[in-house]
Amino acid sequence: MGRMEQFQQEAEEFDRRARALGFADIGNYYWYHTVELPDGLVTPGVYDFRQSLPCFPFPEDMRGMRVLDVGSATGFFAFEFEKRGASVVSVELPSLYALDRFPGQDIEQIIEKIERMMGPKAMDHSGAVVKKHDAAQLYRYLLEGPFEFCRKLLNSRVERCYSTVYELSPANLGPGGFDLIFMGDILVHTMHPLQAMAAVAPLCRGSLVIAQVMPEAPDGRPAIHYMGGDDLYSDEISWWWPNQPCLAQLLKKLGFREVTAVGSHRGALRPSGHEYDRAILRAVK
Image (cartoon, rainbow, N blue to C red):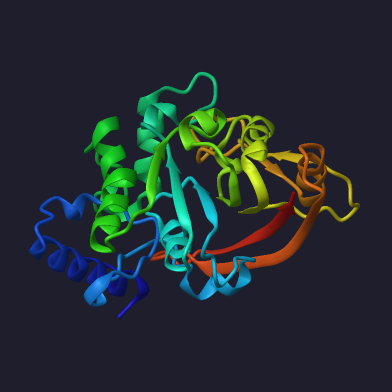
């Protein structure tokens, strides 16, 4: 059995078991993360970070910590922080209309790009995108539904905050700041990464962990690589890739006394098998 066939078989079995629990529209959900749920139920996530967790500088015991997970998607990291004892706030966009897009792009182009990224569930047999969802439906199937499904079955107390990264503040997150803030593959999807970091930095009273693509810097010079191309329709909702020296200098300028490259995490997307490699930085106040 090939990789694609095995993944589809696992997804179909998951859908069958989830429908038996009363989730009738589960077949439309897109599972960004693989999340272990009670009774052996495991979401068919594109990213499976379970074996990669030791690569991240997260404390094993997080009791007493207040943690912010920015851009939770299905919620793997938020639920992991809670499992380790933390009080967790999960941030996600209020709607797909709040997703950054290049000037001139409209919401219909964003929807089509997202559906292409969703792979087989959005394609016909020829590989063409089948237009199935409007912005509200796609938001539910991509972000809200999967997270709420997991939160319910885990009996989780993770709080949900609906906000763009630029608008994060004590007004919508509560006072006191956070002992740990995690941003995984967030800045690459922002048109204004410095503005995003400037919004998050004051909320941190401990450490900030950033995991994402960071281009090599063989000469050690700070730089931001533009990765959006020249085609208005094909940027994969990603434009700027700062390298490690760039991020380190910006974070120090934003008030972090120490920024350390702690390694990377690697894996393969499911079901395509496409390999990825994400660098990990930890900034400490």
